[in-house]
Image 1 (cartoon, rainbow, N blue to C red):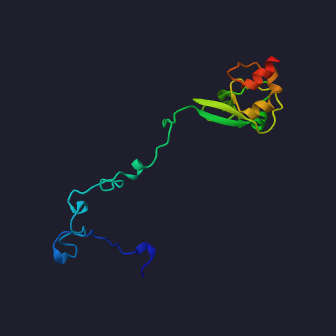
Image 2 (tube, rainbow, N blue to C red):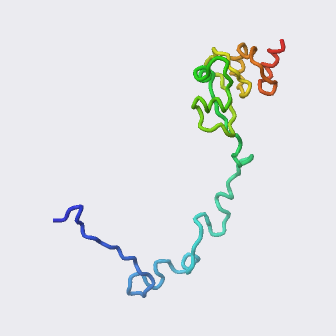
Length: 161
């Protein structure tokens, strides 16, 4: 009786082409009669279209740089910042790494988004702020010392008043 563990071994012999008409794949050896694909040494890339401009060359190109090696931006909502950080802490890539939010603090910028509310006084001077986050945190940012480059113009104007 034949079962799965004692099946007879079968081998599949490759077809020997171009060995004469009586061999089944003789004369043209299944390559057709003439043309580039019928010649020996034929090997062309898949994108080759017979000399026609290839598809990827005909398509429009995307504008802008293509390096993609800029600093990665970590986006945090206000409620996440409120939950993660304690009162008086500074929000930087290094502190995010300490709290286990990110794995590496190398080449990372932090952007704070305006979802939720911020109830604690945290230092956001090392972060970028979205317009909605700046609007929500205008009251709590009055006590935080930050440079004009780090804070949006609307907040700087409110600090001066």
